[in-house]
Length: 400
Image (tube, rainbow, N blue to C red; front, side, top):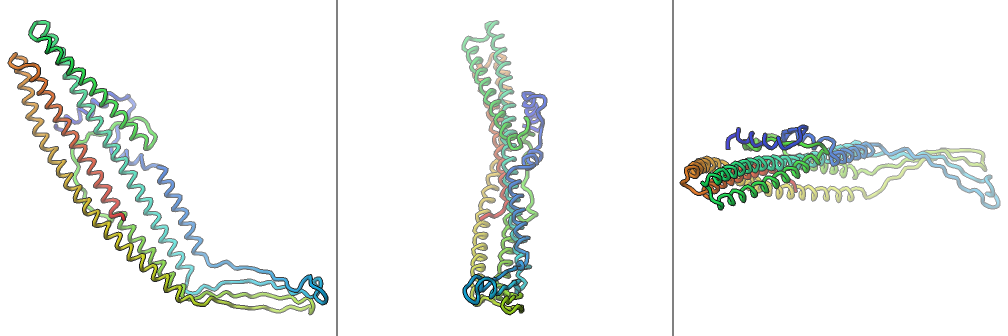
């Protein structure tokens, strides 16, 4: 079926819709589905959480103030407050190895990983929108075919009745024409229901009004792969995250020093003095080594998972290519068959009008042509659906 035929079918579908129904392209449908989608809003919130945590992690340890009161409320010489010793101290942790900067780098890497989660969600929503849009386009075109078949069945019944009034058609012919019309009416009603359901499913993505979709012809071609997939970018971001954690783990080998400095008041002596102390934990180097070993194992697991996912994706893309080629061949072959079927149906129609062929032969010719149109439409829909899967696979990439 040529492009004008597809556009005519789509126009017939549009006539069955309210006047305010809006025609959308597949790009417009995807854009509407992505606008303020709740899942994307949730992803934005999670990214903000990651940014806030990164900012917190980049802060240096806070200065701590403490107050110690000793030798109070005792007995004898230290009864009451006369023998008390009061110390006001400030405690500060001196971080070694530039840990604050390294924590900030790790936080930034976590934010980058979280942002890629949003990209994945966006790609999935776009895929759902494309598949629902294609389902609506297919349902509308199928409705157009059903309406065309119904028009043919009505015209045929009127012709058979006219022939019957002249005695040129039998009662059996009139019964056949009535059955053909009833089947066409049933198919048209079912096609209308399918189109309404597909339309409601699509607009539910953005809680919008009724919409129509463009025709499924012509078939799209496979795009060139020019940008890294989301999965490839995620692996790079996860490697960067693990590298930042490794740098932080190395810095953990340098123990931090806690320094206390303060003033102590001696009530019994009515005097005061400075207090100074320093402390640091021991055994940090072995802990740092264990952390680095764990990170190295995580890197090996990441590389292995990515390699396995890449192999699975390569097989998936190969399968999709084969199915796309098969659907395209079927679509082209059915176009040639439709032309032949239309020619055969025209000959059978002429033979019937001359009285050289029975009504059943004419009905068979019309039904064959309509069936082939339906099969070609299904091949186009299958090709478009496979193409949407191809787009999703390329965009998401090899996902473990």
